Image (cartoon, rainbow, N blue to C red; front, side, top):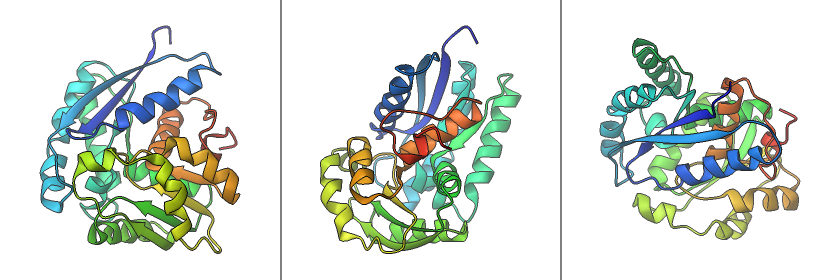
Length: 250
């Protein structure tokens, strides 16, 4: 491909992190590989992380897929994990298939990655069957996320809900605090740590540090999304300082 690879993102209107962490990861890749990327977004309205707002937002995702396919993006990322998981067991497959169909109908077929599906695929790629996770959500939504992951065959042995309902406040969290938050989890016998089960809660600066400290694979929803985007694009999956999943071994 002679032009840059176009990365499309379907983003909640209050999300400000996915448009920084995904580009940061892929810019880091540009430092070690020949590909170049551009980034394009379409937004769905959402301010509070509640089931009602998440359902209304998800209904708007078809429009976003059409808008991004107008730009002939090469891959689409649906940047809201909890919106997908709150819609019921296995919904990431339904969403990905439906939005991909919208791009086909619009004449610019592109693969679709949901952050929810990417997290599941990332954990399976690591062969992780028992994990611990940190999430910014209220406890009921976190329990729903834990249940969704369990239905996909991955046991969540311990989890921490930071209970932050406002989405902009989630984005304002200092990723350095995760260096303390993860220590509240029981990591005994786990295969991987999900440092941020939310694409709005920043975590990138802490991922490699915690992986080095624990000796465990450490991922986030954003890291898994970047990994799956590269997989769907048929590209190698090595990104510096992106943790085990982006080490190039997977």
